[in-house]
Image (cartoon, rainbow, N blue to C red; front, side, top):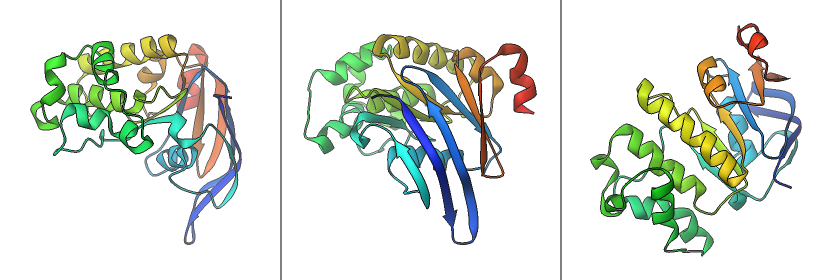
Length: 217
């Protein structure tokens, strides 16, 4: 099973209810966009799917955490580690080194192998984001979570990375869940459905170009 299902997920922080009885289905090998206002619980929902945060109530049906790739907002690269070391962190944690995997992923994301010994601050923002994507894919996860992966990128880099994600989705038969606030992202990523979070509740709809603008307002 490489899809994800949420059943009645609620999450509170003290008296603040962030998610309220959220149910959604993310079928195998589909791409779903999660949209909504800032502070509306989108990132919290991804963390619950990944097992980083426990829901206050409800159930998550998903692969084990090591089978879920996660690109966090802001890329989360460690500045004191090289590109190769950053990419290989999931393997080190899981005890699966796979020495050739780093170069394979650099090739897939059009990064030169000479970057292996560079540090994140020596790379552009778009290159750093590609390194973070490589790290998320290191263990060949069937599910990939992307939290605002394009928010700090210029439009050319944004368009490139969106096309690369579409390509990798097809290559690895990925189930992708992406948090975004931009309707253009949904179109370029060829999303199959989207989930709108509003006041802690969720509405899910299959993608349709003529309905997307209405759904996002």
